[in-house]
Length: 364
Image 1 (cartoon, one colour):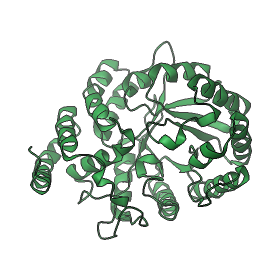
Image 2 (cartoon, one colour):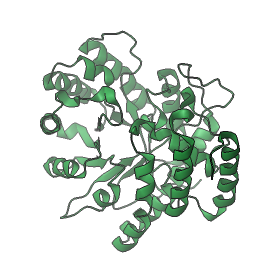
Image 3 (cartoon, one colour):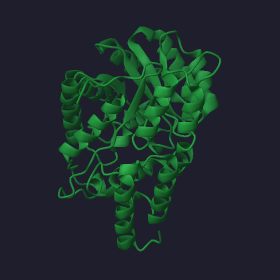
Image 4 (cartoon, one colour):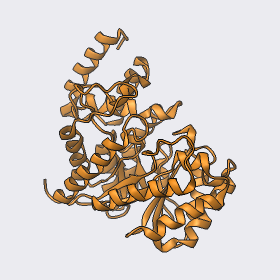
């Protein structure tokens, strides 16, 4: 693999899924068993297109089947693979190794520190993930600022903050110290302004374009807004009035080929082609991330199977059951319309859809 040529007009990370080991007994509650060869091959695919890889995130079923033992191995393996090919890599550092029912703020800080060290040791940029434990323990914005402030002071390089809405994870409701999103935005902006030199950017996944634009305008110079909005990404990345969002998106996993072509067009100043390439992917994205949104990973893995990136449709924690068969068949139709399944993939995808139909009984 040649050294990846990154996009020049935007920084774009694709949050990547993991490929389960189908012989690994990946039942709900069981330790995650990962097919490392297929998992790393998919990351090489994303790097070859020009994307950075955002690893060990919710798209990889982080905290939703991918336990800390498997996550730490994923971070180490992805770090070594990124170094070998020259790929851009950022990885999530969180607190999901905590097992105590009521951790203290100091417990949470120490858990973050352990994971921060793991990510830095892998040579990746740190994404400070939103923490379920912190959301449950913090009494207000000051507790978030205390924990994050200490972590930002310790980090070797500027980090990416992570604001994941409760549609992606209900346990994160009220993040940054308030269930009022205006107050939450004020809280995180205060944190960012205080530590701007330690922050590369903030990933925002609220599925609210107007709120993202308002936050983007308020950020200090040099701090990026990484859109995590899997509904409005074309216009947010394109930008307006001299401002744009960079990207850290789960939807880039299945739409990587047309999205890469669109970003190359944007690099060349061809906004019309950028729009034309991404517009057909939006109906697919809206179906993929439809409520309950946190089950979107099932559709991503289904599309990866159809496209030949893996040899089976199974997931860690048995999460392949997270969407109905009819939902997945419609996903196939939308993927064809979006240009996600390339000509070389069409016959394989159609054959696998027939296999899926035969097993589930759904009409295709």
